[in-house]
Image (cartoon, rainbow, N blue to C red; front, side):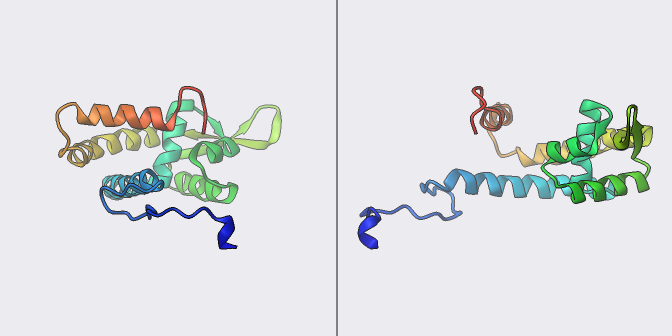
Length: 161
Protein backbone atom coordinates (compact mmCIF):
# COMPACT_ATOMS: atom_id res chain seq x y z
CA UNK A 1 0.00 0.00 0.00
CA UNK A 2 2.79 2.42 0.73
CA UNK A 3 4.10 1.83 -2.81
CA UNK A 4 0.97 3.62 -4.16
CA UNK A 5 1.64 6.78 -2.18
CA UNK A 6 4.36 9.08 -3.52
CA UNK A 7 7.03 9.63 -0.88
CA UNK A 8 8.64 13.00 -0.55
CA UNK A 9 11.92 13.34 1.26
CA UNK A 10 10.87 16.65 2.82
CA UNK A 11 7.24 16.73 3.80
CA UNK A 12 5.77 20.03 4.93
CA UNK A 13 3.46 19.28 7.82
CA UNK A 14 0.72 21.67 8.84
CA UNK A 15 1.10 23.61 12.05
CA UNK A 16 -0.56 26.81 13.11
CA UNK A 17 2.75 28.54 13.77
CA UNK A 18 3.75 31.70 11.87
CA UNK A 19 5.87 30.83 8.86
CA UNK A 20 4.21 27.47 8.22
CA UNK A 21 4.85 26.55 4.58
CA UNK A 22 2.45 23.62 4.34
CA UNK A 23 -0.38 23.58 1.79
CA UNK A 24 -2.74 24.13 4.73
CA UNK A 25 -0.99 27.28 5.98
CA UNK A 26 -3.34 29.77 4.33
CA UNK A 27 -6.43 28.07 5.73
CA UNK A 28 -4.90 27.90 9.19
CA UNK A 29 -3.96 31.57 9.10
CA UNK A 30 -7.42 32.56 7.88
CA UNK A 31 -8.98 30.48 10.67
CA UNK A 32 -6.79 32.15 13.29
CA UNK A 33 -7.52 35.62 11.87
CA UNK A 34 -11.25 34.84 11.85
CA UNK A 35 -11.21 33.69 15.46
CA UNK A 36 -9.35 36.81 16.53
CA UNK A 37 -11.67 39.17 14.64
CA UNK A 38 -14.82 37.27 15.67
CA UNK A 39 -13.81 37.43 19.34
CA UNK A 40 -13.24 41.17 19.14
CA UNK A 41 -16.52 41.80 17.30
CA UNK A 42 -18.42 39.56 19.72
CA UNK A 43 -17.06 41.76 22.53
CA UNK A 44 -18.46 44.82 20.72
CA UNK A 45 -21.90 43.20 20.33
CA UNK A 46 -22.23 41.67 23.82
CA UNK A 47 -23.25 44.93 25.57
CA UNK A 48 -25.94 45.39 22.91
CA UNK A 49 -27.46 42.00 23.78
CA UNK A 50 -26.78 40.22 20.50
CA UNK A 51 -24.29 37.74 19.09
CA UNK A 52 -22.46 37.56 15.77
CA UNK A 53 -25.09 35.17 14.37
CA UNK A 54 -27.77 37.81 15.04
CA UNK A 55 -25.67 40.56 13.54
CA UNK A 56 -25.02 38.48 10.40
CA UNK A 57 -28.79 38.38 9.78
CA UNK A 58 -29.14 42.10 10.47
CA UNK A 59 -26.42 42.78 7.89
CA UNK A 60 -28.38 40.87 5.25
CA UNK A 61 -31.65 42.62 6.17
CA UNK A 62 -30.06 46.07 5.99
CA UNK A 63 -28.41 45.21 2.68
CA UNK A 64 -31.31 43.41 0.95
CA UNK A 65 -34.43 44.58 2.75
CA UNK A 66 -37.15 42.05 3.62
CA UNK A 67 -35.73 38.59 2.96
CA UNK A 68 -37.19 35.09 2.95
CA UNK A 69 -35.90 32.88 5.77
CA UNK A 70 -34.45 30.33 3.32
CA UNK A 71 -32.50 33.14 1.65
CA UNK A 72 -31.25 34.33 5.04
CA UNK A 73 -30.01 30.81 5.73
CA UNK A 74 -28.11 30.73 2.44
CA UNK A 75 -26.69 34.24 2.89
CA UNK A 76 -25.40 33.53 6.40
CA UNK A 77 -24.27 29.94 5.89
CA UNK A 78 -26.84 28.70 8.38
CA UNK A 79 -29.29 25.84 8.20
CA UNK A 80 -33.08 26.09 8.35
CA UNK A 81 -33.35 25.31 12.07
CA UNK A 82 -30.49 27.65 12.97
CA UNK A 83 -31.91 30.59 11.04
CA UNK A 84 -35.32 30.04 12.63
CA UNK A 85 -33.73 30.27 16.10
CA UNK A 86 -31.87 33.46 15.17
CA UNK A 87 -34.98 35.08 13.70
CA UNK A 88 -36.97 34.01 16.79
CA UNK A 89 -34.33 35.73 18.94
CA UNK A 90 -34.43 38.89 16.81
CA UNK A 91 -38.23 38.98 16.97
CA UNK A 92 -38.21 38.51 20.73
CA UNK A 93 -35.79 41.44 21.04
CA UNK A 94 -37.93 43.60 18.72
CA UNK A 95 -35.15 43.83 16.12
CA UNK A 96 -36.92 42.04 13.26
CA UNK A 97 -40.39 40.85 12.29
CA UNK A 98 -41.73 38.12 10.05
CA UNK A 99 -44.31 39.30 7.54
CA UNK A 100 -46.47 37.33 5.11
CA UNK A 101 -45.33 37.24 1.50
CA UNK A 102 -48.09 38.31 -0.90
CA UNK A 103 -49.17 35.39 -3.04
CA UNK A 104 -47.67 32.68 -0.81
CA UNK A 105 -49.60 31.92 2.36
CA UNK A 106 -46.83 29.75 3.80
CA UNK A 107 -43.85 32.00 3.13
CA UNK A 108 -42.61 34.67 5.52
CA UNK A 109 -40.15 37.43 4.82
CA UNK A 110 -38.04 38.79 7.66
CA UNK A 111 -37.77 42.55 7.94
CA UNK A 112 -35.59 44.66 10.23
CA UNK A 113 -37.47 46.99 12.58
CA UNK A 114 -36.56 50.61 13.36
CA UNK A 115 -35.18 49.34 16.69
CA UNK A 116 -33.09 46.83 14.71
CA UNK A 117 -31.68 49.62 12.54
CA UNK A 118 -30.79 51.62 15.67
CA UNK A 119 -28.98 48.63 17.15
CA UNK A 120 -27.24 47.98 13.81
CA UNK A 121 -25.93 51.54 13.81
CA UNK A 122 -24.94 51.35 17.50
CA UNK A 123 -23.00 48.15 16.79
CA UNK A 124 -20.93 49.94 14.17
CA UNK A 125 -20.12 52.76 16.60
CA UNK A 126 -19.15 50.22 19.30
CA UNK A 127 -17.04 48.16 16.89
CA UNK A 128 -15.06 51.03 15.34
CA UNK A 129 -12.37 51.42 18.05
CA UNK A 130 -12.08 47.65 18.43
CA UNK A 131 -11.65 47.20 14.68
CA UNK A 132 -8.96 49.89 14.67
CA UNK A 133 -7.10 48.03 17.42
CA UNK A 134 -7.29 44.80 15.39
CA UNK A 135 -5.22 46.34 12.60
CA UNK A 136 -3.13 48.75 14.69
CA UNK A 137 0.03 46.70 14.19
CA UNK A 138 -0.12 46.99 10.41
CA UNK A 139 1.90 49.57 8.53
CA UNK A 140 0.16 52.61 7.00
CA UNK A 141 -2.10 51.45 4.19
CA UNK A 142 -1.99 47.91 5.58
CA UNK A 143 -5.63 47.74 6.69
CA UNK A 144 -6.81 48.81 3.25
CA UNK A 145 -4.45 46.36 1.55
CA UNK A 146 -5.60 43.52 3.83
CA UNK A 147 -9.25 44.32 3.10
CA UNK A 148 -8.54 44.40 -0.64
CA UNK A 149 -6.64 41.09 -0.60
CA UNK A 150 -9.29 39.34 1.49
CA UNK A 151 -12.05 40.68 -0.75
CA UNK A 152 -10.30 39.40 -3.87
CA UNK A 153 -9.64 36.07 -2.16
CA UNK A 154 -13.23 35.64 -0.95
CA UNK A 155 -14.81 36.88 -4.19
CA UNK A 156 -12.55 35.82 -7.07
CA UNK A 157 -13.12 37.62 -10.35
CA UNK A 158 -13.82 34.41 -12.29
CA UNK A 159 -16.14 33.08 -9.60
CA UNK A 160 -14.01 29.99 -9.01
CA UNK A 161 -14.11 28.34 -5.61
